[in-house]
Amino acid sequence: MEHAWDYSIVWKETLNLLRGVLSEQEFRLWFFEVDYYDGSEETLRIRVPSSFVRDQIKQRYQRLIEDKFYELLGRKLLLDFVVEKRSLAQERPVSSSSPQREIPKERPPHPQLRRDYTFENFVIGENNAFAANAALAIAKNPGTAYNPCLIYGGVGLGKTHLLQSIGNSVYGEFQNLKVVYVTAEEFTNEFIASIQNKETHKFKTKYRNVDVLLIDDIHFFMNKTETQEELFHTFNALYDANKQMVFTCDRPVSELKNISHRLRSRFERGLNVDLQPPSFETRYAILKKKIEQKPIHIPDEVITFIAEHVTTNVRDLEAALTKLIAYAELVHRDITIDIAKSQLKDMFTTTKQTNITIDLIQKVVADYFGITQSDLRNKKRTRTVVFPRQIAMYIARELTEYSTTEIGEYFGGRDHTTVMYAIQKIESKMRTDPTLDTIIAQLIREVQEGTK
Ligand code: ADP
Ligand code: MG
Image (cartoon, rainbow, N blue to C red):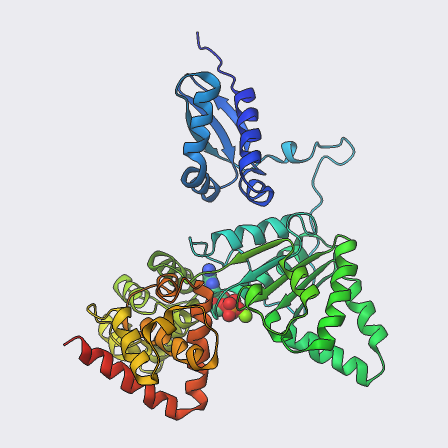
C-alpha cells in the first residue's frame, strides 16, 4: 500500500521562512500563485502557474527551500514542480447562483493603445523577466499588486510595449475600469492647453477619475515645474484611492534632474524595475516571434545572423528585420544569408576587435581631452570630465564586447543605465553636430592603432 506523504505543514513553514527573507514584493511576485501539490518519500511537489515561474523559483530559491526542508525534517527532501494554472474552483469558490464565469463582452479597441502591444507578443527573457512579471501581476490585480510601478531602461527595450500591455490586458479583463495611457509629453501639452483655455478643472477631473493611469517617458517632466506640481496632486489623489499607476522612464529615478523632491519620492515609492538589453537567446526568440506573424520564410541561419549582430536593442532588431523583408519583397527574391549580410552590413556597429581594452580607450580619450584616466573613473560630474567620459563609454560600446554593466564598472562603478544614457546622449549629439562625428572617428582610429 502506498503511503500518503503530506508535507503541507512543511510547505507552510517554508513559506513563512521565505516571507521573512524576501522583500514583500519579491515574495508576492514568485509565490503568490504557488500551492502545495503533493508529496512522496523523496519529494515535495508544488503547483506553479507557468514553466517560467518554475524556472525562476528553481534558479533563485531551490537551494534555500531544500535547506529549509532539511532543517524541518532532519532529512533530505527534494523540491519538485507541477505546472498547472490554479483551477477556477481554487481561485474563487463557485457560488451556486452563477456556476459559470461571465464571458467578457468585447470592448471596442482602446483609443490610446496599440492592439499589438500585448503580453502575448512580448517575449520574456532574463533581461526583462522581473519587469514583465511585475507588469503581469499588475494587470491581474490593478491597484493592489505594486503601486505605483516604474519601469526604466534605455531606448527600444520594450518600455512602451510593456506599459501598453498592462493597459490592453486590464481594458479587456476589467470592463468597469477606466484605463488611460498618455506620454509625459502629451500630459504636459494637455495641461498647458488647459491653462490657456481656462479648463484646468476639466483636466483635473479627467485625470483624477481614472482607475489605471499609465504615463510613458516621465523623464520628459524634467524642468517642467508646473506640470510636475499638477502630477504630484494627481498622484496623491489616485494613490489615496488605491488606483493603479505605472510609469516608464529612460533612466533610474535617482538620475532624473530638475524633478521636485516630493515628486521624485512618489516615483520611488512602490516598485522600480529595469529592462536590460536582451541576450542572444532572447534576441533570437524575439525575431522568431516577429517572423511568425509575417507571411514570409526566413531561414534559421539568417535569424541567427541578425541575432548575433544586432545587439543594441529590440527596436534595432525589428528595423533589421523590416529592412530585409522590404528588400526581399522589392526584388522578389528569397532571403538568403548573403542578402542578409550585404543588406544589413551598415546597420552593424564597427566590427569588434577583441584586443581592444577599455583601459586603452580611456587612455586615448583622456589624452585627447587633456585630462587623466582617473578623471574618467571617478565620480566627478564637472562638465570637463562628463563629456569625455560619455565619449569613452560610447567608444567602449562600439569597439568592445563589454556589456553596459561591465562598462559601467570600468567607469567608477556606474549603473548600466548611466552608460546607456551616455551612449544615447552621444548618439543624439552626433546627429546634430557633425564635428563630433569626426572627433569620434579619429579617436576610434587612434584606439585601433594603439593595439598594433
Ligand atoms: P521603448 O519604449 O523602451 O523605447 P518599445 O516598447 O517601443 O521600447 O519597443 C521597441 C520595439 O521593440 C517595439 O516594436 C516592441 O514591440 C518591440 N519589443 C521590445 N521588447 C520586446 C520583447 N521582449 N518582445 C517582443 N517585442 C519587443
Ligand atoms: Mg517608449
